[in-house]
Image (tube, rainbow over the protein chains, first blue to last red):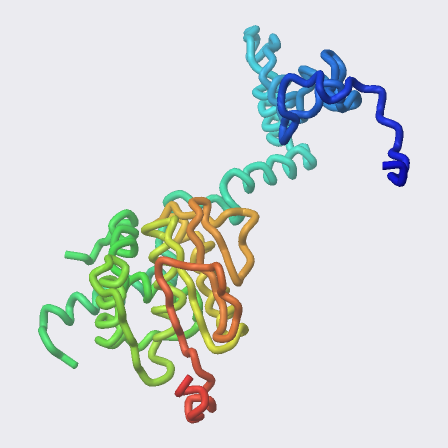
Length: 145
Length: 178
């Protein structure tokens, strides 16, 4: 007993016998817990803080009054931006056209938008159709090879 | 009867007849060349169609060089499968990575061509277009690798093995036996 090395002084917390529960994983001693209202990370995310995406979407969907074709209408800011951009592009505003093209390409995929019903078949398509016809003709004549 | 094919009819044929799809791919990849059509192309097309439909589970194609084996099985077939099922998972193996890459590049070229995008709704995911593995917007993919390449942890619904041996190694007992 007298040979025991001196223990570091006990922290000034309540002595063992006062605990009325087991200290273990997920159950820190009551004295060392954060007290109510005290944050473990005071500089963390404040309540109600929004990320950039939420902010952007919120503001974009705000309504504004716009005058289009002499009529006052309620539209969202997003709609107003798109309208402005397209209108400016249509007047030949080069930066607007560039931005718009980028947008269109993003939406449509990465090459040109699938061209709708191009008037006639391309040369390659013609070749394919020729081959197809030849095959179908060959089938009718039965074995020829 | 088929003298006047409308565009819609033509696209329907491309979508449903693999042989025609192959011919279209051939002209896409060899703009100047003429295709000497032969019955073997239709036979392979029929077999590969059965593979796509799950009627054939194992298929070996042996043909002399320049008979469109690779174009049909490693280029057109993955593109066609992904066209019909954008979530298909396809693994393509060749003896060397540069060959595997070349086939993958061709396949990706097909899938990005305007006519492919007209007949199928499959689109490549904008951020996953690496040649060795390109991914569709529906999580399907075509993964290209070579024998000896690392594949652990990767699987696929269909596995295509195209020229697993270098020509000179085909004569080596060591490789053929292993």
